[in-house]
Image (cartoon, rainbow, N blue to C red):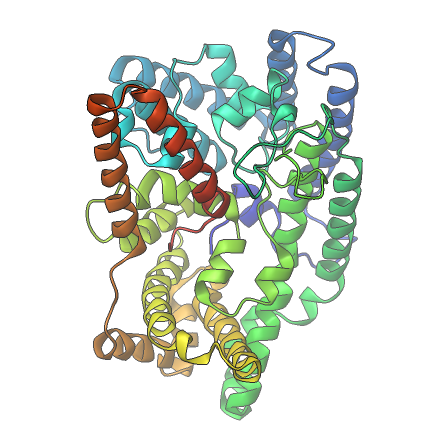
Length: 487
């Protein structure tokens, strides 16, 4: 499972208790609370209607660098050095290759590099609808670039956002977005500047509950106990499976806390508005990183990945999965492992994740349609797949928590590598359907051909195709905005 930043995996390691917090964890929490207050001030006194984009860029950048220096000391200069070097490379080399081994700043740099490449070096007909919508048509200024990569709202824990969304927020254009209605037309609700207060309050409440759970329950259920010799020798298989699930369930609230707090900070500054739903209610989930209820109730491996670390999954999808020329799933998981760091447990988790993803996809495609009717059968299927999904996810991510290779293999050997073996048998025995990615590529080719036909034979030319393509974008982006790399 991916995390959004070094903060997510280093600064929020399991805590012994509320009194004995390590200094780096204290610094992180203090800085994020300061960022929350700064975000409220930023929205109140430096609103886009009251000051220029230049001032907003400068203040957001300076506050971000201050937080970086507070947390990391002089090592924070690495942010500036990397940003400066990367900016020069984008100008000189045409942003052809921009992969750097860092976390959230790596996501932003590589995302922006590909968005500029799509907007300035590729033709529109070569792009997917999502690539076309995110394409950047001009080179950002140095201030815009540093503000995007180092602003105070996301420098510590993210989440990732697209460059165009961030610039629209700074310039005061984000609040005028409207959600497409059912008939495909945008509907304005007369709310030019919706208040984020309700969304921020709700997310802070989730943060508080997650932190309380982490400080009280998580330490009672250590993941390391899964490889305890006495436990392995005496526990029954149902007991092992139950403890595996419960211990990994208890390990998740630290991520819920970090990501939800980061989302709340952005919302408090006025960033993260995604339009209105059909009832006219403002939606503040543009850059949300997780959906807790869907995670805990996942009935498929794909559903879990769709709702866990959403922005990282989107980043992997956009910079790797959609652009891979062969084995996109394998390449994407391998990139995710490299992005996380050098611990062997990361690689073992993501290699296992490839197997589990492909096997789960094969099972779902071959059997799910037999269990949709009647409702009682569908309920039974959902219950079985929920249990299977939660155990499989827990089994897959144990090395991610243990980090080292020896304890990871100790765990898997205690389970006789059973899920690895089952996944391989599934892939060998079940037919695999054509991937959604290939179908999507073929649809994009058809759109390109339709564009050429319109330009040659239709007196309305480009406008006719643009109208058709905008409708396609609305219909497809609604479903794909938060889709996972497995689609």
